[in-house]
Amino acid sequence: MTISPTGATPEYEQYLRRLPKVELHCHVEGTLRPGTVVELAAKHGIALPTTQVDEVYRYSTIYEFLEIYRTVNSTVIDREDFARIAYETLQDGVELGNLKYREMFFNPTLHTARGIPMATVIDGLIEGAKAAETDFGVRCAFIADVYRQDPPPVARQMVEEVLAHRRPELIGLGMDAAEAPDPPEKFVEAYRVAKAAGLRLTSHCAEDGPAANVTTCLDLLGCERLDHGYHILEDPAVVARCRDEGVTFTVCPTSTAVVYGWPDLTTHPITKMIDAGLRVMLNSDDPTMFHTDIGTEYAKFCGQNNFRPELVRQLVVQGVEAAWLDDIDKAAMRRAFETEIDELDREYVS
Ligand SMILES: [Zn+2]
Image 1: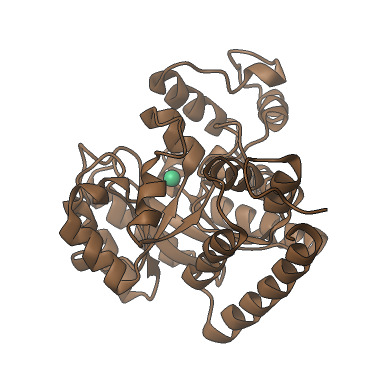
Image 2 (image 1 turned 90 degrees about the vertical axis):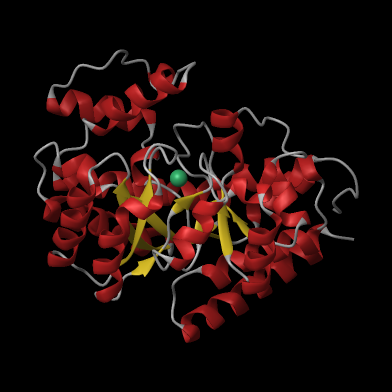
């Protein structure tokens, strides 16, 4: 069997799904299986707008989307729930996209503001990830995210609380939610505290804010990689800097196609970022909420762009390179990935 040089054939889609993958931009709160939402709501006596599994994630506006996000989160309460959602999303990643390693975001204040202890959140997620590693061989570390609509002192307090419950699996600080009203410089204190404690740093950036936010995140917050970054294309000087410095952008085709109305992935800013020589790697963001998964992201984005296998391999390897693993671990993962991709190439590529 060989993959066609043109068009997204079933064989090419299968090849893209079977490639080994790293994912560095996925929010655990956006990964709940709809069936799990219904079961957790029943467990805790929480009323949902619908108990029809295929209706749980039905929305037509960003406001409805955010309302569903809040409702879904309200069903995750005890340690067992947090363990379950971490376990299930890692299983989904393995089964739908051959996921090998994920650094997964969680929003501590979305839970602590509901009265859930930080230890319940962190220990539950880690417990679920360890069980998934045992059962499926997939590895996972965690990144605590600042919720931008929180006031800066709340964000700083969140970081201190996370550090008080620090575990080896908790390796970084990130930042998400609406960027335009709450720019990155507001949260310099939270990042300073995290950096001093040795956490790795990233941030959602230039997603719905200007290219200048890239510079702020790199220089003021000390970010080592960036999430999204599409508006960087509006400033050639920032593009040139990030290309020269090899900054990695964790990009998300489907979620941005839905939220920002960029359905044509061949003209999507991610395609232009690749053309501009920027380092990107593909991710699913909030997979179940956007009706996607990491395998589908590769299948859709690389398939629609009809990328050559060499370019797809480059995207996969850039994911490994941008992971916050130590050098020995990373080199071993890269060798294992190259071997697995070589085998797939022999099977699929003429
Ligand atoms: Zn995100």
